[in-house]
Image (cartoon, rainbow, N blue to C red; front, side, top):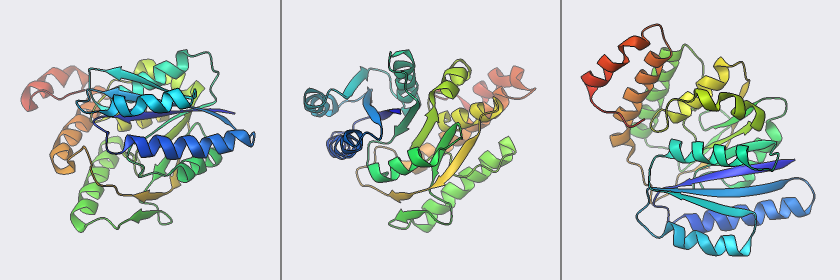
Length: 259
């Protein structure tokens, strides 16, 4: 089995080194035991710090690590470019996934997703399943905001989705190849668009319990991003409804939303 891991990196100089160190050591050990082969691709996007400088030595020491550097930003954009890179590569990857650069998901927990995917077309780490663990426990305000955002998604898409936003997901490459032309959101609503498109195409996605460790030095302010995420999800719902002809009116009413 061949696995491709995409690591989107926006101003991650304080965290990307440890992430590459832990993931490469763990999956190199797995590879040497003939369990699976792997590739790690860091997609640097719109960064203004030393992320690229820190990544380079890891590439020199491990041929299974590579990187791309774009002037454009956004996690969704970075992940989509990673998907394109691996789908176009002559690697015949069985699984293509992505994980946040902050080590909130350890390589051991990510490996559990690989084992757990089974006959499903995709698997998503879900922090809010009963058997999941969040360390440290989220504040009441943070938990409430997450629950409200999830409620909006469930209400708009008439679904029982759990944690769409967790940055640890893996998919079968053939499923990604089919839905790539259909993805319309590359920024705030990317994760929802990805899962929704896969389900609309008939692919089966599995929610899986995880241990998630909240990290410092976050590059995203949740409270500032929350409204934009909500507006973007509403926009995605309009695009996938009989009212999509009104999308220009919606855009004018709420202003520009990075897509």
